[in-house]
Image 1 (spheres, one colour):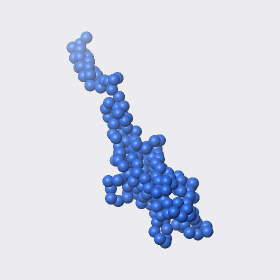
Image 2 (cartoon, rainbow, N blue to C red):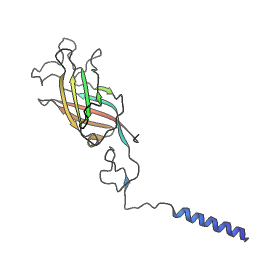
Image 3 (cartoon, rainbow, N blue to C red):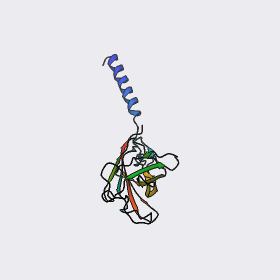
Image 4 (cartoon, one colour):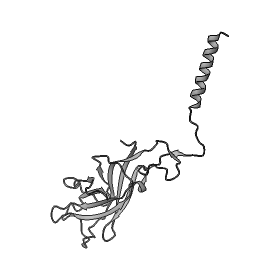
Length: 194
């Protein structure tokens, strides 16, 4: 063999050995995954190291799947609105983090000028801004919009969305003063943080 060929062979072997030694060995006793508590898919203590795979929940839609048929909290047990035709609730939904002073979601009344929402109909509120869900306490209120006499509280509640997140939804139940319940569902999409 010529000296040049031997030299090239030695250099190639050295490069191969150098690049092969840089390859990371997977530790079979350690588990990688998402360890961020603000991710709905975090490993909840079963992850040994964060491997950069975290995805976060971004709100795409709010839903009220049911609410009380009558205004029982007012002590009257009457329809939400006065009238012969439109007696169902005109829903106003508000949501905020407990540490915040302002509601990050404050819907318009979606019943005015549109069909009313019966207590078993799902009312859908598109998210104008896709807020990221955080591992903290949130408050929410649902009102019936009234043109006269002020809005009626239908229910209220608190929740931690990360604790309640499952399969693209956060599902929570709120109550009013007489124990009537309402279900709020927050639809979210998983993606990397901005």
